Image (cartoon, rainbow, N blue to C red; front, side, top):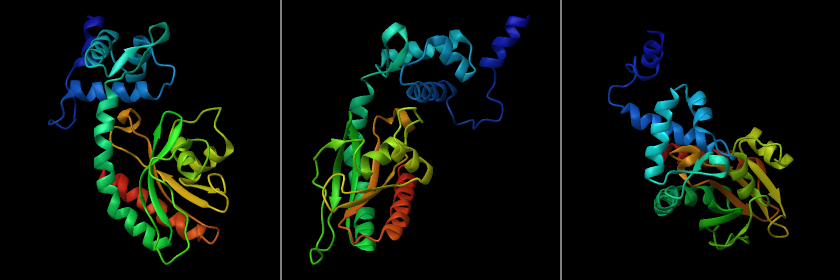
Length: 242
């Protein structure tokens, strides 16, 4: 009887949850999110504990996600994110650009600097759209498709700050996580100042895309105004993407 009762606690009614939500799908997405927060992966038993589910239910969730290549077995049989997420994320990037473009234009005008949106590709930071400042103003830009390490420059540091804290985090990443915005000076190009803030994308950490929005200009950039405008742009864009 005790075993039956324990099972009902994990698989019983949805007690107060929105009746339009599919419980199994909701649990599968929660599993992806939980797995994504563990760089070394999780065993099925560990995942079950973190989700508060019976191990048998968790095993079936993992097998279903494996079938669609959304998760896979890594070293030691630990469950990690799978390659099935990659085509989903790549198809989202063009939509991200189209939604962000009007906001980048507004941001560029407000701070009189080049505004950009960047994503993480492996260990690199790559701008996927840039709106340059007014041509009458001496400015520096950010070339679409150019690459630099995530650990260098405001855009990459902002992306790193959106990840779970790690002992390997630099002081710049810790500060950006605390303030919600990163400021860099001369790291990508001499005389250039960058300000960036991470985006909160649909699907959270398992969305397959990590991104930041920001501005870059020469030394005369108004840092305080830029911080305020970049934070607001990131907030509005994140809300639009929910």
